[in-house]
Image 1 (cartoon, rainbow, N blue to C red):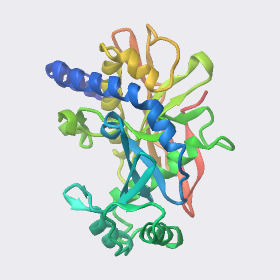
Image 2 (cartoon, rainbow, N blue to C red):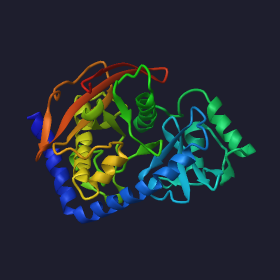
Image 3 (cartoon, one colour):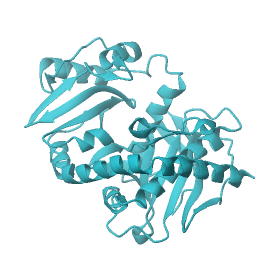
Length: 330
């Protein structure tokens, strides 16, 4: 019964994608070609400066596509974008005069962190840029109104990506977050799947995968699509999160079987060809000491390919991932 619920998500996602095949395949093929050509430049730019902890640098699909003569990075704190960093011809500029979801970053910075500094393309090393970075370096405590689930998801997502990029004492051994040009990468999809019962096609404005990772050893390495939620206070929470992961995994499967699939496969960090029998791993990632294991060992078939379902339950203390119970093992 539960397997059929997940297969229904696969069927619905494939139907939406097949109806709009020409549109999304064209857009994502363009992304793949452009990002491939820009990777070397992105890597060289990223190597020209260091991150200032606790600030983290991210790159989204559109930014990677447009990184020809300059690169725009999202600068995040507790997983939330607080500024855009533009690097061009060796110059690094910070700006909070950028809209995110129709709201300027300087407005959300004041609302969520009490930061009243407004930056309009100031030099990274300027007095204003230094004051901005120092504010967040020295800031103590959680985000204002931290109890909101979406805010917590941003924070936990950053914790998990940092964990997956760590080389030692990993909570998920042999699992590593995908990067583009040595930058944390946010992979977009044309599907909006945050509400499993209202899955829809949104084109270039679709939802993003929380964490795209590679898991495994050597030739057995596969892609992992991880969907993270900050709350696990409902019986259906893990199943709903996993349905979202399955929808996005279905898109990744269709993408890898499209004309640009081989290019995306290399962008995701693989050197061999896309396997004839592709295996993808979809996992829910939730804080919990009460585990729902009803879907362990479930596999969803798409022609000769499979999506394996997994769980990652964890506890967190002092902004660090602690105990982890998972089926995502190699």
